Image (tube, rainbow, N blue to C red):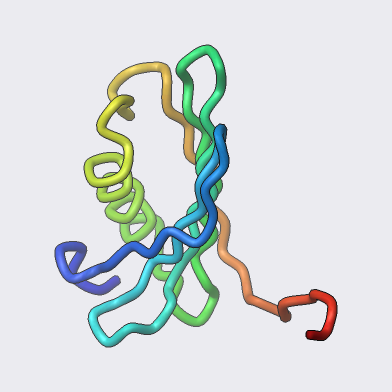
Length: 100
């Protein structure tokens, strides 16, 4: 994976109970997307999809999880029982919406 301190996050969606961030490498290529869901109990669940062309190994996923934990989720911690990550490797097939 790229050096974690060179990755950038761009929020693409924000609701009262969730957010979505695109994660970019140092040259601006999208490498992953994080869907973050905030439960009323204070727990946070994250689905992290690493794009298959950029996905590395389990160590790369662990580094990215830890970076998201530190930078985007200061109110919860992997060291507690209030944060869960599901990490997937995938490929964007397309964006489907009504033609404008």
